[in-house]
Amino acid sequence: MALSEHHLQDDDIHPIDIVENLASYHDWDFDRIADDQIAMAVEGQWRTYSLTLAWSDYDETLRMVCSFEMEPPEAKVQKLYELINLMNDQCWAGAFSYWPEHKLMLYRYGLVLSGGQMATPEQVDAIVQAAVSNCERYYPAIQLMVWGERPAAEAMQVAIAEAYGRA
Image (tube, rainbow, N blue to C red):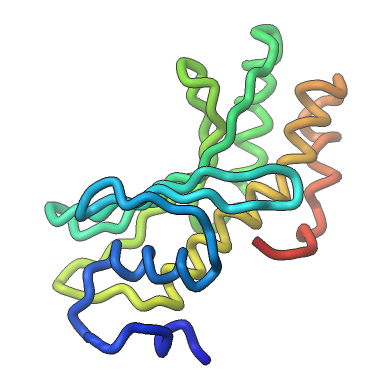
């Protein structure tokens, strides 16, 4: 059964309702924080990722942040930013950033639905899967550069191939 057929019959469904339905479909832990925001945990091969999706009526965008904790040594933070630039050069949708004050690595994406467009379950599933698969793909490179003392360009070599498995 397609995701769009799984408990979704109304054509005018709120994007966060779609995310909640998707989380239930995949049996992910989630918490509906507000009418327009949901947080969930998705188990990956390397770690569990925290995803927050929020709907903004103002700019008609479904925003997603996928994060995981990371505490690189202070001396490695500049090199981490160099690595993030290399990672983002290979990401066509979404981007990584590091929030040092919260010690979080982030992958962010915004699905713009201007003009009253509606998100589909397949679109929402695709952005969640892209976030987790990109985090899985680059996690070993991050670890190799931060803890393995490898230069960013060399660490990226472990991320050349797509990660196998699924979220």
